[in-house]
Length: 161
Image 1 (cartoon, rainbow, N blue to C red):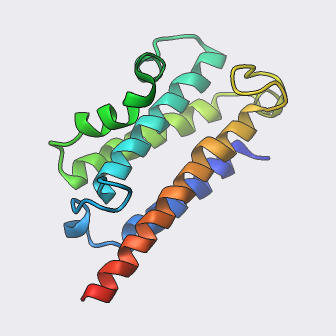
Image 2 (image 1 turned 90 degrees about the horizontal axis):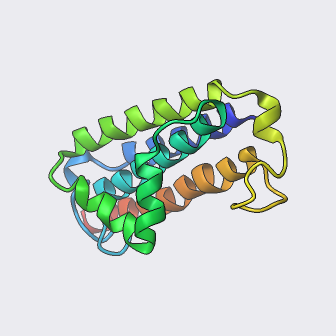
């Protein structure tokens, strides 16, 4: 696998889903439970940050504030991260996502390819998994799941128009 490509294609998939919905519809609830498109993007932003912090730590340990919140807050993390961005405009949330994605791409770029593909480097995720595997499931797959919800929402907008 190629971590850079995994992240690039996940980002492209997300952006295509976002581009399909006019930004003035990004704040309407009901895309994923009570979440809007903006809320989904806020949620995904927090996961980009968690992954960037986790991967950067393999090269040079440093602070992991978002990852620490995920560990501390457990099941409340997702909603708290969305709530933390509720007063931001859709454009501001998009910029926050872009910044977080750039941090994640930078973290991956700083890692040796052999480390990204080495099985067993993340025992907390599963002994038989590599960092590449985690990125496929937790980044690319996660985005695909939410883009599918955004696409259903977009289709419902088209039907109601």
